Length: 134
Image (cartoon, rainbow, N blue to C red; front, side, top):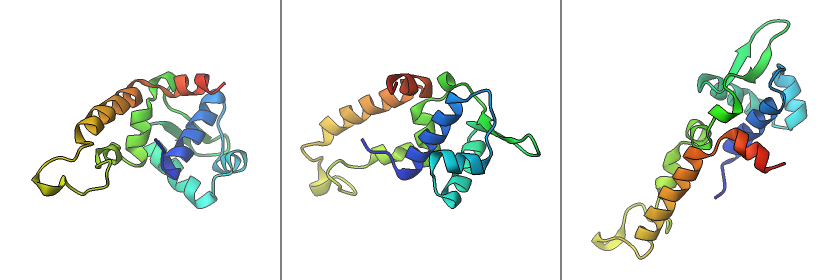
């Protein structure tokens, strides 16, 4: 499964902040560290803040930091906030609806596979993802 660019960037931001949980980072510092295009990063930080993943503090000692711990943030929640989980609700064959008034040969397999993917996303935390990558 491939995540959208927005979800991939969100995972990068959240993972970075989790790796430095006791620090606050300015948007400019995150831009330099993560090499996410500036306009994209600003929109993403707003979205992550509104979704409750990060805390934004204004002022001289302000910046961004995780609002929740990495073990309280699940992949399904991140995907849902960036692109929506409905991306998994589409037909694997690309049909807008099942053709010929019945389901295609892949329908049942995809329904089961999609349910398994959603279960993994619902139960995998950002912390688990970070530990698996080390």
